[in-house]
Length: 49
Image (cartoon, rainbow, N blue to C red; front, side):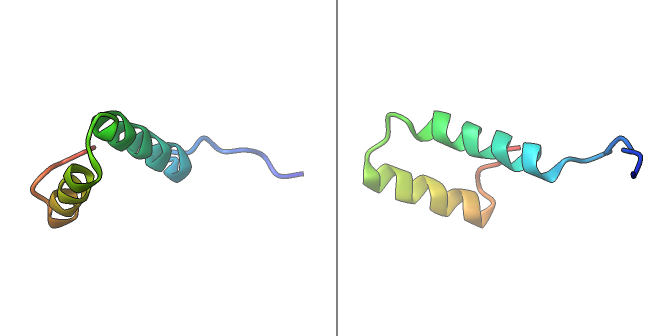
């Protein structure tokens, strides 16, 4: 049986947190606003983390 070592960085928890932040910010946006918002996130104009 392997011993569990404490992780310094948990990828799954990190990306779940990012997903929740995106969902919270986009909750009241229209489809067009969401598209523009996600485009700006991908281009690095808006930081989520």
